Image 1 (cartoon, one colour):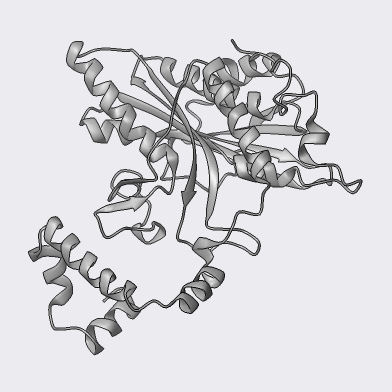
Image 2 (image 1 turned 180 degrees about the horizontal axis):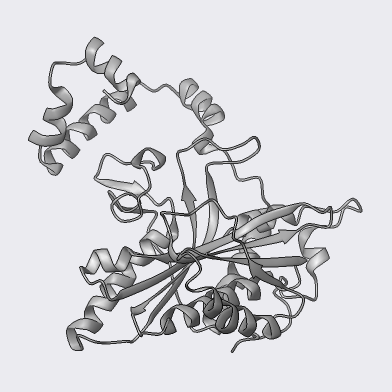
Length: 341
């Protein structure tokens, strides 16, 4: 067995061939019925005292450390930015089909919290948005096999991931996710326009937060570098004065996950700490879902819960709302329009 823990369990406590039987011989419906019976019987043994201990110790059930009011205000701001930039805001379900993260996004299923009902807890909102993009693009292609109509979707969602995190971090957190789906338009046309749009939304959310830098990575070995400089960086820079734009050629993460181009967004705190708050890039997800190599998809995410964490009360005891009064993070007054509208 590749997994030594699973190998021990099967050797010491399971009937021979049990794993193969569960995976291959039982239908999904029968496996669900079996697992529901298992956990129904296990739940019947839980006492109130054991329940409280589990709630106290289980890392998956820990409360978020950020202020709920701050997060709500930032979430509303994010949705206002989506509307301003022509994205359709959605409210996804907390679960999605089994394999949403691993079937097309190449993420290990071990990093996902799987349910006994053939679903998984959403671990990345862009995976779900990609499914919805594929459905909407499929309808467009049925009406016109060469449709170039783009689908722009966005959502904020609390996601849950199973891999261990560092001290003080919870496995669940809120993200803003964006997806733009369309058809290859030639000459890198779809790609450069989608990049400008996504970065514009994220910078609208981040407006006034502090020093921000956006770094782009050409994953094609330099073939897209000139186009990125002239048609993305040189377009964004005058629209967002004060934001740093450049290339991140040393980026190590996301290679193999993204194709073509990726980007990251960093914020420098007043204390000088550089914190990554956003990430994005092109994927082959809608192409795989629709069986059409001409389909293009840009996905990106912004850690809105991480942003709230950066806005901790100052040494003078000011709250997030008090320090942000009069700027885009407050809900009173007008919110500035997008610079790239």
